[in-house]
Structures are given as structure tokens and as C-alpha cells.
Length: 353
Ligand SMILES: Cc1cc2nc3c(=O)[nH]c(=O)nc-3n(C[C@H](O)[C@H](O)[C@H](O)COP(=O)(O)OP(=O)(O)OC[C@H]3O[C@@H](n4cnc5c(N)ncnc54)[C@H](O)[C@@H]3O)c2cc1C
Image (tube, rainbow, N blue to C red; front, side, top):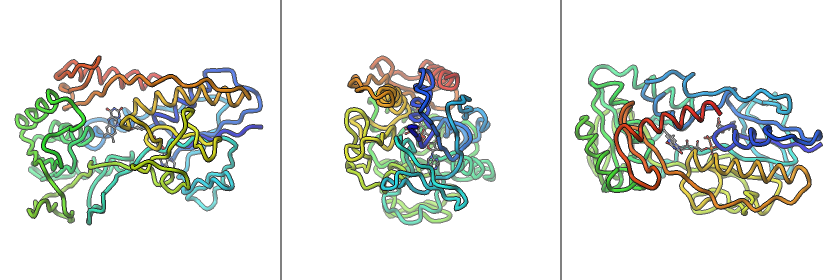
């Protein structure tokens, strides 16, 4: 019996699972997928939950039913790489042993040591995004919202909230001289214009000093506000950060070309937890997941895996509410309805898979 345990059924974990289930597997392989949620969460859409523009059900998908996979839905507290087992928060849960492990538990907020971030809302888990959505939904007329960070998730959160609540006073505190520092200047200018047109204040060159229950202090100026949302950086999940393996400068686990941990080759890492030359994204996690499924399939059949090919990323799409957006499509920066429709199409495909 070979016990394969996949922890995290997100963008990376699910691709590995479906990649394996699509093939005929040797009889002696026992697959377990562990996730805190009894469904697959589409994290790329959590900004809609935070803004209250879609129902939970629209951003989750059932895990595939297959008798070759055993699901465990519980909160993991530790990966014990010495005893080769997964340990749970719930003391009544027996640890689950593995022979092969895939770590795909995604990322969490990085607060960079800023004091008072316990008063901020988040979009990094389903529960946190839902909490944010309730806080926004309960705001009185003309309430004040500050969003810290103007990367992709901050921009999507701010624009979706604007569309959901035209009455609110929305402010983005952005560390850079322009929003979306990873994108082309055409897109940056378009998004800046969108915020001017839609009455969202963007404060550039911000350096948030601390957050309080009812405000944010930035560069010596304190702004009163009702809800503060943190979108100013991520780091790998604590479960991955705690492991005694080599990490890169973002605390992601260094892997070899087969996505194996060099110190323990029976452990594979995918998505936001794995060191990569590319920025973390759902797309990257999915492509890595496809390759890991091929590697695992060979290894589980006691064959030598083929060297994975270089990854081909298709560019990133972002939304500005439901009918406007931006993105790099076929290496060309695009803005307006077309990239927004493409994003809807990608989501549709992702749900159907
Ligand atoms: C608002 C927002 C918008 C985004 N937009 C885009 C976009 O447009 N395009 C794009 O490519 N990327 C986007 N991203 C990034 C993308 O969501 C992530 O890079 C991607 O989800 C990473 O995939 P993953 O498989 O590593 O982890 P995830 O998809 O996050 O999956 C991790 C899984 O692990 C589970 N898990 C975590 N901890 C535990 C635990 N302790 N116990 C049990 N289970 C656990 C979670 O429930 C989850 O199912 C966005 C992110 C956000 C927050």
C-alpha cells in the first residue's frame, strides 16, 4: 500500500487530484485529500464575497466523487515530517500518516510587523472574506472603508465594493507611486482613471504605521474609518513556513525540478507554498499541479518521471466591478469589457473542471 496525502484542495491540490484520477492507478495506491472546507474554494473570487456581490455557493465547487479518494475535512495544525503524518487541531482526530505528501495549503496575510492589524479584515480564507463581507454589508450609509495595498486583490476588492455600495467612502493606501506595480503602465493608468471616475481615493507612497479599531495612521496622518481591509502582502501558510526545509527569501519551500523537497523527495510542494521564478497565482498553481500529477503517476508506478517542461503562463486578468477589467492577454495589455469577459470565461471553465 502506498499512501498519498494531498493537503489543500485549492488551485494546485485539485489539479493534482484530478490529474491522477483521470488515469488508471495501480490498485495499491490510497489517496487522501485533506482540506478545512468540504468544498473547493475559488480564492481568486474572494473579492466578491468581501464586497457581498455574489453568494458563497457561486465561488465554491464540489470535490470530485471517486471511490479511489478519501476526503478528510478538518483543520490541520501541523505537518510532522519526522513521523510522516498530518496532525489536526481537533484532539479527537487521529494523525494521518503518509508515504507521499503534497503540500498545497496556499498563503496567508503578511502584516510586515505593522501594529494593530488584528483590527483589519482579510480576503485570504473563505471565512475571513465572508467576515469582511458582513462588515461591509453592515456599514451605515456613507461609512468609511480603507483598503491597504493596491496589488491585484486590493484593486479588485476596492472596485467591487464601489460597485456594491456607491454610498461608501473608499480609500486605497498604496505603497507604490502607481497601483498594480506588476502590470504594464497602460493598465496602471486605466485603473487609476477608473478610481478617479468612480470616486475612490488612492493615496500613493503610503507607509502605514499602525492600525486602530477605528482608523489607520499613515505617514503621520491618521484617517478615521469604519472598516480596514488588509491586501498588502502574503506569505506561505504557517504550516509550510514551520517546516525544517530550505526556503527562499519569501519563505517559500525550495523544490527541485520535479517539485520535490530535495531533503525529502517523497514530499511535493505546489502553488503559493513553493518557491518559483513566477509570482504566485491560481494559474501557476494549476499548471504546477498538472506537472506534479504526471511526476507522481510515474513515481507511484515505480517508473522514472519525465522532466517537466518549462511552464507557459497565459497572463493575468483583473476585474473592476462586473463590466470592466484589465489584463495581459496574448502578452498584450488590454482594458475594458473584453478582459472582464475573459475573466468570467476563465472562472466558468474553472468551475466546470
Ligand atoms: C482576492 C484575490 C484575487 C486573486 N485573483 C487572482 C487572479 O485573478 N488570478 C490568479 O491566477 N490568481 C489570483 N489570486 C491568487 C490565487 O488565489 C492564489 O495564488 C491561488 O489560490 C494559490 O493556489 P494554491 O493551490 O497554492 O492555494 P489555494 O488555492 O489557496 O488552496 C489552499 C487550500 O488549502 C486549504 N488549507 C489552508 N490551510 C489549511 C489548514 N490549516 N487546514 C486544512 N486546510 C487548509 C484551504 O482551505 C484551500 O482549499 C487571487 C487571490 C486573492 C486573495
